[in-house]
Amino acid sequence: MDKSYTFEKFEEELEQGYELYYTYVRNRYLLFKTSENCYTQKLLTIQEKNPHPIMEMLTKKRIFEMFPFMEQIEYKVREES
Image 1 (cartoon, rainbow, N blue to C red):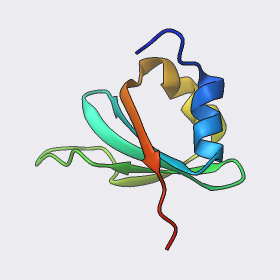
Image 2: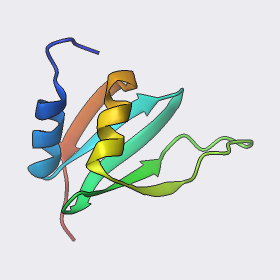
Image 3: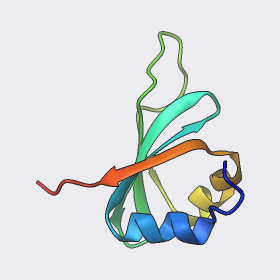
């Protein structure tokens, strides 16, 4: 990950409604803000024997803990339905 990309920038993009895609522990995920201090993480890399949950609700604290280990971060504008 680019060292100039900070957690504050990551958090700001979530606040602005972006969907963030990233790799964490060899799995690809989608993350977006659901409500105050609540984020939805969806597993995109579904393998036959994968013990990871397909969808999780995370807090800002948990995202902060994971951030240093995230790789290949990409984002796009979240489409409201």
